[in-house]
Image (tube, rainbow, N blue to C red):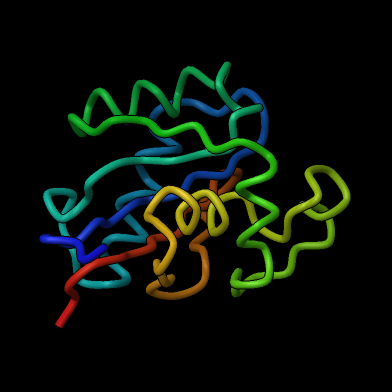
Length: 134
């Protein structure tokens, strides 16, 4: 199936209890790294087990983006395509990077990362894109 437009997803990983300012700072840093604005994003994504992290949901509302919760099987399915290999993340979650795998899984089967995750304090953000990026 061909995508009509680009699907661009910011994946979020974080320690427990972060605040919205920290999540927003990580998203903004990742966007700036790739020369993008928040308007380019289609959604935010994170691991399903992060559903109670209110700061991630609040950031989605602030940016007027849906928050996609990705299940463990989908995160593991794209793990080999992650650019970062975090031993603490592997030990805690079974995936090398929550932000990278969430972005990849949510953006779709043929998604690619624009680069490795960006860490801002206790929050990481990675951007994946699928569709027509030419």
